Amino acid sequence: MSEYLILMRLNPGKIMDTLGDLRKISNKPVSGVDLCYTMNIFGAWDVGVWINAEDSTQALEFVQKKVKEISGVTEVYTVPTFPHGNKALETGEDEKKSQKAAKSAPVEV
Image (spheres, helix red, strand yellow):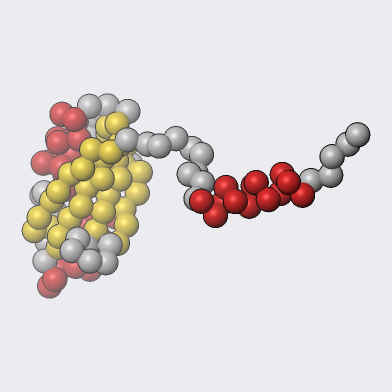
């Protein structure tokens, strides 16, 4: 399944009602789509929704039939994404700590 991030701008006068309607969407809103979660965003966009979809047609069906029909949604931007895997990426600082720990470990003779 592919992952999609759906960004939305909301009508400022209807934010609370629109958020309530978004939270009422079922976990399986259309065939082949799983709703992972919704989130508030601060900045250029107001809300984000993560979904898994079997293909882009089903993702677009969800956006057209469910998201765009919600009163108060003024703009929608859908971003296809892909996972990086379950392992968190190490930063340069993490690598230095790992190397330092390896150097200070006792060596058996």
